[in-house]
Length: 178
Image (cartoon, rainbow, N blue to C red; front, side, top):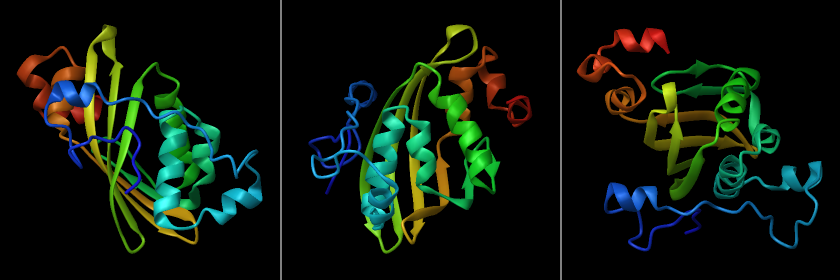
């Protein structure tokens, strides 16, 4: 099992403080790759390789490389965003990755063409409010490209951290603000 920011207990961190302590993955290509070319990207075709390379670029805040792993008609969905093409998805990631956030990722399992993992993000949002988000990720890979990407996280927990509205942040109306 290959992981970025792996936990020795074989999966999820035992506590929130351990989750915050996940180390950042240093995005270094193996020595055999050297300079990445179109040819080397195209040869990264298994769901495991695609997920590992995709999230190595993600934790390194490398949006340009990240985009190379998405199919042009990729479908993305999470609790806030939904896109049906690479341009839309990359617009979102470019904005998110430009923030000063600490990111970590762990590949949990691969079943056929589907890679499952979890990523952690620590960042600030409105007026410097600290956010710790734990996101379950599902990537469907065909021919070396991500064709579906679904991220799931507890929206109510995220909203309570992100917005200064206290319990009101859990109302669905907040989704329309974002």
